Length: 80
Figure 1 (cartoon, rainbow, N blue to C red):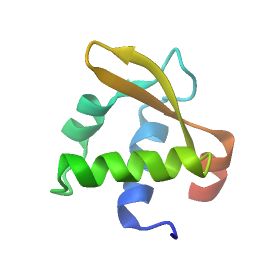
Figure 2: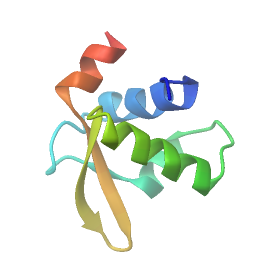
Figure 3: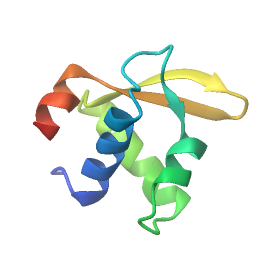
Figure 4: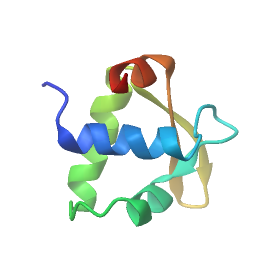
């Protein structure tokens, strides 16, 4: 699977919100609030899984019932 627009939008949000480490990671709910692309929760979950598997983002700690994510150096380079 290749990077698509949804992936780029999610990585851009993480970058703009300075989510660069586990301590500054933001939750999926926060990302969803910033993300006005009209995608379902399932689509976003698949996007997060893909980006994690490709090491563009990493999972941080849980924030209540939501996972948090932050962008990696590889993800920042991809946004380049």
